[in-house]
Length: 116
Image 1 (cartoon, rainbow, N blue to C red):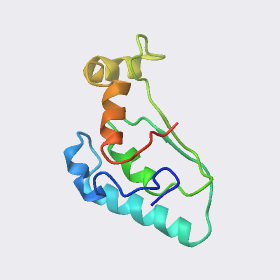
Image 2 (image 1 turned 180 degrees about the vertical axis):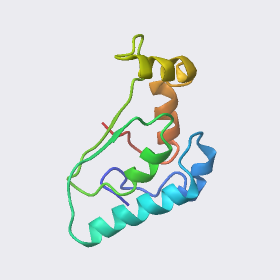
Image 3 (image 1 turned 90 degrees about the horizontal axis):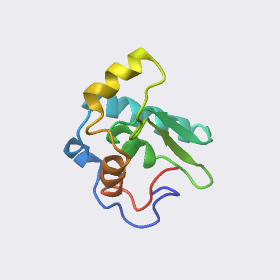
């Protein structure tokens, strides 16, 4: 359990396939290994994810936030304007489904609290 979740997880991490996105088995293994390895070697600090789409990787990262650490996610949820052409292209493709509400609903299926 993490600082975010003092109760039993709502859904186990192996259920991440139920969340739409591109965080594949190899990605999950490497993220999990790295975060576990850092914790075992005393690495501490706040966590930040830039670009969360529907939250698949954020859900996994949330399991590794320890007491006193803040987990923050950042995305262009519901943004009307993109800061550059590259982002504008992404927003045209994903805008209808890239909403804060979708991310939060997915995250709350696995955790009891939302990240910052």
